[in-house]
Image (cartoon, rainbow, N blue to C red; front, side):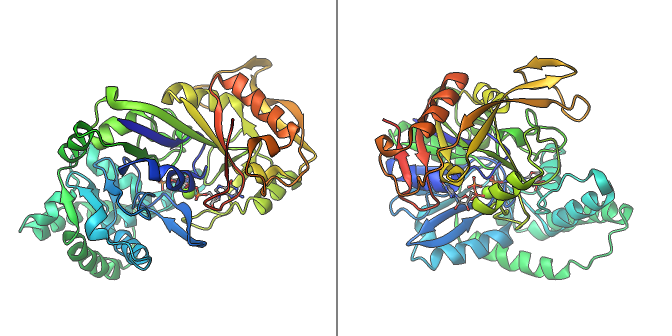
Length: 421
Ligand code: GDP
Ligand code: IMO
Ligand code: MG
């Protein structure tokens, strides 16, 4: 049995915290796509930790954590992350497993990401510059190197061959930066990675399924950053949606049970691209301040706006969401009035469908107004203690989406979450 937790917006919905919260009910937590562009924040013994590639179940003893074949892995980031996690007393030799088909991010992939973004000028995607796009390009272009290749005695030859290809592209971009330090770090990290558990991910996970183990697949980024269904080209390079679980872990679809979608009580986006409900005013600034909306990976300020039900409805459809978790409800505590986008107005006509693209159609959001709860919710631990105005907000969202919010997160802490019942 496999359940999925993924983001329904443009990332940073609070996946790390929610996976950590649910992890105790599972035997395996597995990442199925993305790479170190992700930044998943959780609190362990009141200490903040940001995970980029290691699944967010890692702080629970007895849980197996798998980095699946659909992930792109940077050994340098992994080594640093392992050091952090080990400092909490976690034995990664025992509970971290890496699929041999996982593609490797090389130093030249990071250089190519940077060079390509620079060349785009004003049209840049706002990539995290972690090498994600070029690594997935080498995967679909059938050039990439995988974790299993590290065990080949000729790995350095394979590496040099691919590096030479990359160098030609970098020369075309006239990229001059010296990346020899990254290479030194890369080869040190590779030696470290080789000591970890490298497994055949698809047999590994299917044997667990057969043995009746409970698997939690942890998404990175969010639905609107999916390479097929997001706001292309301002997206990441992988399938962030439920479909990505099958190809990113080697799991057949009939094993998937619940798809738990996470949305903030409002909406954020980091990087470029369309964001119809964005608030470029004092209210947006207030959301950023109260929600501490700064990127967990890059530190960039996140763009903030109202919740967008047109986009969320689309995300529920694409993912087959069965349960919703709404995070950061507490961030709205002091707002007197809230707005909820119910329709897009395109050329004078209202629609509830996602347009093919938003650059040219420029949808104008139509809003329904709600009274804010204007009350501190972060101390509440029972649904019955939450303000009626918050319940009205939640009930409206449930009705619109046809999928219910099952949990409300009301603070960053591990225990700040309320079951709706
Ligand atoms: P992820 O990428 O989806 O895991 O999300 P991030 O970790 O990038 O960003 C979510 C941020 O919100 C983190 O700083 C979390 O600690 C914080 N957070 C998560 N849930 C809540 C919540 O319910 N309330 C508040 N105030 N912060 C939250
Ligand atoms: P988590 O898992 C928010 C955004 C980048 C950029 C675009 C492409 O923490 O939710 P990439 O580095 O993939 O080439 O960047 O996608 N992006 C994210 N935004 N949260 C993330 O991950 C993101 N990962 C990538 O800002 O706009
Ligand atoms: Mg994040």
